[in-house]
Amino acid sequence: MAINESFFIFRSARFCFFAYILNVYADFGEKKRGSMILPVNGKFEMPALPYAKADLVPVLTAETIEFHYGKHLQTYVNNLNAALPGTAFEGKSLEEIVKTSEGGVFNNAGQILNHALYFLQFAAPKEGNAPTGKIADAIVRDFGSFEKFQEEFQAKGAGLFGSGWVWLSADASGKLVITQEANAQNPLTKGLTPLLTFDVWEHAYYIDYRNRRPDYMKALWSIVNWDVVNERFM
Ligand code: MN
Image 1 (cartoon, rainbow, N blue to C red):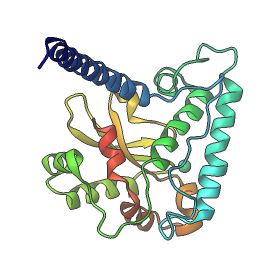
Image 2 (image 1 turned 45 degrees about the vertical axis):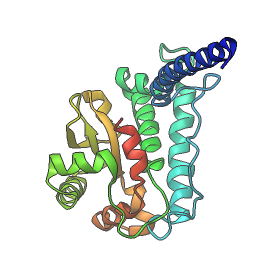
Image 3 (image 1 turned 180 degrees about the vertical axis):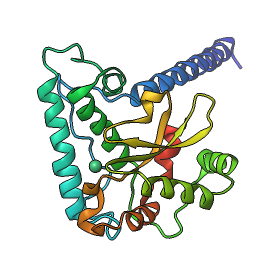
């Protein structure tokens, strides 16, 4: 092998190594940025659904998606965008607004964040759908089994009085916790990382399940996209 040739190979290997390191840092940066919802030209946008509005049938009908996503969430987005100009929250991420605001700004920002986490965690129904990967191990570690976790999660959702959300979150040490949050609250304000949520406001289930909140929650397990939950648990 000519000296020039081996030098070229050495340089290429060195280049690949540095490219790899840069890539690792770029990925890390991407994840950090990816976890934040930012305004575009001063306005928050509707989160794009990763499925068609009839894809979650029979768990959630297209009509529910039309109203819950298309009208309720759109209203929170419109309200927040109308409230932001001239405030200290202009240009801030949604997460930062949720952590530092109160009143109407908090209610609308919280509901946008909550609904983005809710709608983006679903996929077409799958029979026997169950957690996979790291989150599956953590659920067994912290709740004993997936079934015991579901039982506690559903009981806390059914037992929440009025409007709100039941959440699975991770604390700073990675331990999983289930919390009930009223109205527009998000576990982020308690220093937790939200991973999975069931919306238990009546508007989330009344079209498809009328007053049967427990039936709605039971059905949701088949549309949870555990890959998304694992990404949030990184
Ligand atoms: Mn809702």
